[in-house]
Image (cartoon, rainbow, N blue to C red; front, side, top):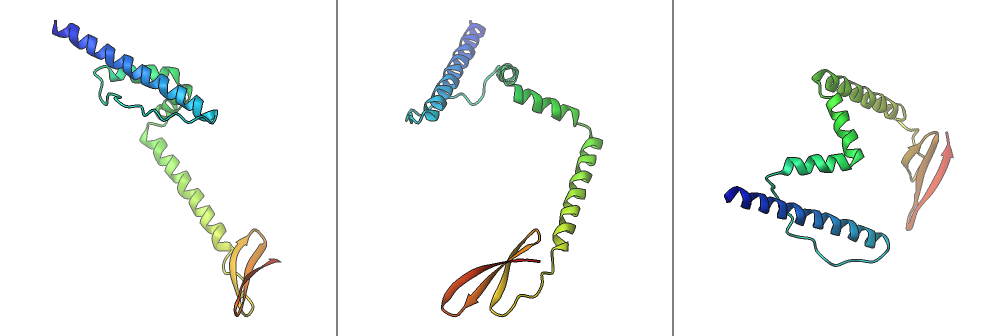
Length: 140
């Protein structure tokens, strides 16, 4: 008797979850069409006894999730993670070297400050008393 009741509870929870998912999809479609639906979806069970089955079903339905999980499984080993981190550090160092090469900028003329350096174009702002700053674009 108790086992039968648990199965009924689980199936009713699953049914309510499926209805909530359908409502979310419908609301997304309505929102895309410019219609706002004020219905708040609630009563989504936080824990399910058959949660793993539900997760497996969602993964099976979602190709992008499948690919992400496959990528994670491929890169599980610590050696791969270390290689990835080395590559990230190398990239960061290269980018830092590039940004360091852009500095120091040439000394700006009087009443002028360097705003930023975009490639080989230096953009400066000129200040005059009582007036807003003006942008000056110069090629190096």
